[in-house]
Image (cartoon, rainbow, N blue to C red; front, side):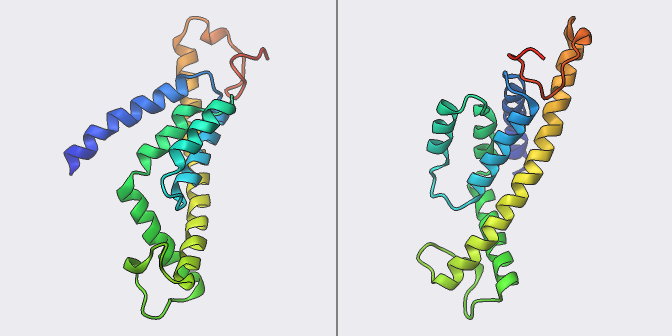
Length: 169
């Protein structure tokens, strides 16, 4: 299991570095990642890739790689853990459903179970998106600073980390 996780880490890191290196500000990368985290954490029945393709096509400021990175982070085992935690959270907030367990959560389950699942899932998705935004923003800013300091003209640039690279400041 550890070997499997270790083999994924370089691919995720490489993808994030490419996302940071693209012509997007740290805010745009972080906002794209946060949106992706929110949408992928919700029970969307696999429609995330199609939505991300549409956003990437129509929204110039969206970072396509940051959106796709959320699909790597929220792979099926992680999504099931999020769903289990969502049902637990919803049950903690609204009380348990008599005779129901985490294993009973599905779209065909009763409304009481589905309600707890969706409320818990929404709360977790928002929390994960906020944390994802903050972490990604810091990583993107760090990457941009390193790139500027490594380039010969980087020391002379006075542009903010969040300035658009294609718009003069």
